[in-house]
Image (cartoon, rainbow, N blue to C red; front, top):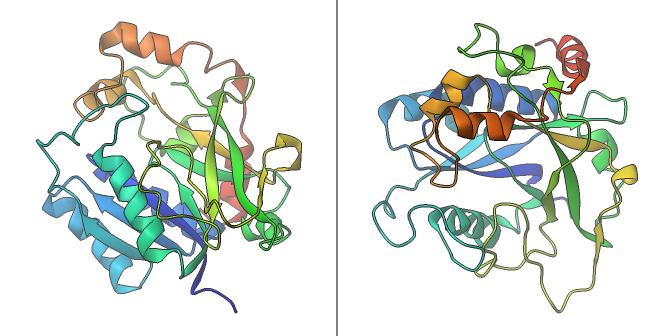
Amino acid sequence: MAKKHFLTFATNFKNENPYLKDWIDYHVKVGVNHFYLYDQDGGDEAKEILKPYEEKGIVTRHPWTHLDGTKYDGATKWYQRNKNHMGFAHAAKTYRKEFQWLMKIDVDEFLFPIDGSDHLHTWLKTVDIKKIKGIKLPRINFGNNGYDTKPEKSVLEAYTKREENYSDHKDLGNGDFLSSNRFAYSAHWWHYKWYKSGKMLTDTDQMGWRINHYYTKSLEEYLSRQNVSGGRPVGREGFDEKNRGCNEVVDESMLELLKNIGR
């Protein structure tokens, strides 16, 4: 029996108002059916941005500021639980019966089809949902393209230089296999039911997508977000550290996709 949603996102966000609309609009165009958003911002502007999407049934927004100032607020070590992990776990436990696939993803990350199609479902529907419990999608970092100040272009139009090779991954989880994720202390991987047999798809050569990660953006944007993540290296030196090696390859494939989907 088909699920209510085929492809969904679980996302924690804070101070992302300049980017939220473009991020949602792009992903709707390429095939994301629903967004479970954990609102750590708490401001009226974010609510107003999301309101039309909530009314259309595209977004489920959960206020998520009740953990501010508690032991779950801030950066953690690998064995510690924080409010981001708790948001992801809530999505997995609460909604796993209504979606087929759930992606852990941030607002600075964009799924990009590398199989020659313009839609994420083209490849994903070739994956056997009875056998594959999760997919480790490769992630590649894009740099600042030489921008010190925020450009007038959108993120996807402005930042077209990246590192040479994949440097990380994130999990796309199959709802039929996801556990409650109570002890999944990561923004990258899911936990799966121990009693239900399934395989992880990990070979990057078999992937139809990648994750484009726009972490630094311009220096101005990088510095403006330093109050959000306690794990973000600070100052110009921190920016240079994160930006190093991320402008090696000119990659304008996203621009072609944007033309094809009418963005």
